[in-house]
Length: 179
Image 1 (cartoon, helix red, strand yellow):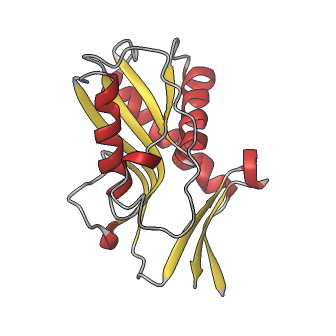
Image 2 (cartoon, one colour):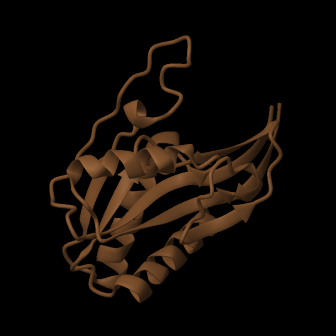
Image 3 (cartoon, one colour):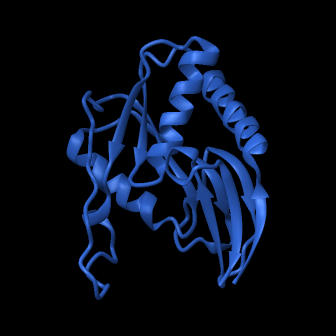
């Protein structure tokens, strides 16, 4: 198994700031916009983006949530081992809000489809957008595209994109791993 560095910590930081600026351009003061990180790994990215918006760009009152999509996936009963659910934490109304789903890697699009179904339990949003750090563009099973992407990567099916966050993995980096 070999691995190649796609992004180092400095490059990840630059991309996170660019994504934050793109969000500001579209949503300005975030008065009607919420960020929702998809469990498990999209939460790290959502937290980081929210921190950058608040600390570096003085955007106040960012509403940040976490959405577990485990039991909304179309493949959740197909595995041999039981799935472990993550927590959902949405402490605000989503009705008529602009939602930005945040996930680390967009691969087949199935997680986003599950998130679209799951969020309906909380109300009817005005608009839903997608922010991803990595877009694996040739791997899509569903017609889903990100509105904001950090980097587009052309990956073949026997390769995996692994995103590391310093909060959990002790470093910010993105690797391409050949299985």
